[in-house]
Length: 133
Image (cartoon, rainbow, N blue to C red):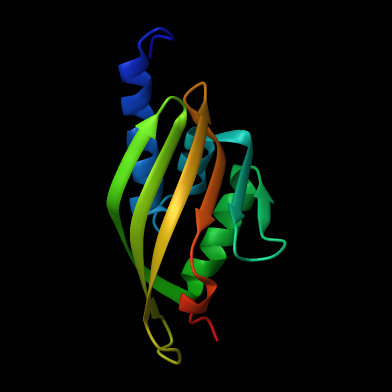
């Protein structure tokens, strides 16, 4: 990816953000390490103190979640400008043990990139939509 080729950079960023949004529930740690900067800052904004630094930490928190929940992930809209990609998506969850009701979570996400890797990922959603308990 040539530094001066803005369209190529944007297309790369769009593809990487889409991959994360549509496949975080199946991606292995090696893929997280390829897509994310070593100091990536991942946050679920509505949840207090929900900050994870580094691809290993991001993978760990998502892997723990997917141990309990099957997820179907859909990107509804995606847009990029410069080094930022914005996503609107729907994440549908079904509890693996069947002891909790399934739910859908509409999510807005912001991804920031540097040198082809995700340096920040922030998700915004209505906390009342979560049905974890």
